Length: 294
Image 1 (tube, helix red, strand yellow):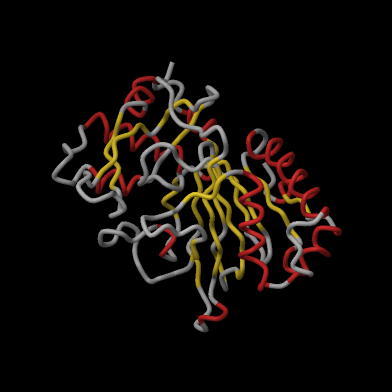
Image 2: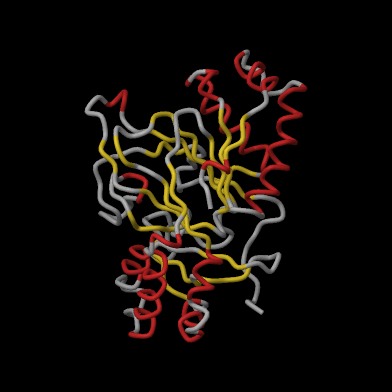
């Protein structure tokens, strides 16, 4: 699948309104309806993601406001941590994935580790997540996307693996659990959403850390084999869609269908030129969660 074919440009009327700071007028209302239709076609269905282009012409000052406007048009913006963060800055904070009690993948410059957002959360998970590219990296940092349908198809000949992945694992909460609650959340990697489609929640390191917590048993050999089989498919470049976002592009992803990661990146030494993206998590109504798996 061609990454570039998922690009769609904001309408000229909307961009003209945005340059005036108008997110409430008729142009914005019409564009909100258009965005919802595009998401139904390309994110709920289709490739599982889309990229809206053209905001760079309006300037960086409106990026965060534009992202929240688009996110509100698609559902309810979710808090991304216990501090209530609605828009998270995705940038290199010099950490490694899983480092300490709270470091996240988004805080590093490392590649690989394909995952879904909110893997540390209980259900309901974010239905969508967005990324608005403020500044790309000096080099690298391309997105890698793998649909869960591709993984299930590749694992179809090993139903025992799928059966294990449909059972609960302990995911580390990364310190976001309320006081008095366990340091892990139990949930399956593979599940059914409320509309009966296949869903996924995953970040291998959070599972490894979770099963090392005092409240959790160690991973069984069957669980480790199932996770290894899942990773083998996930890390195969033949299953991935890859592309690089440019400044001003706003992407919407189906967080229950698409696992994502990035290639390792090199950044500018100047912090004002370093890679920076803004991210939101969105819960549509009705919320997508698990069923009994039947």
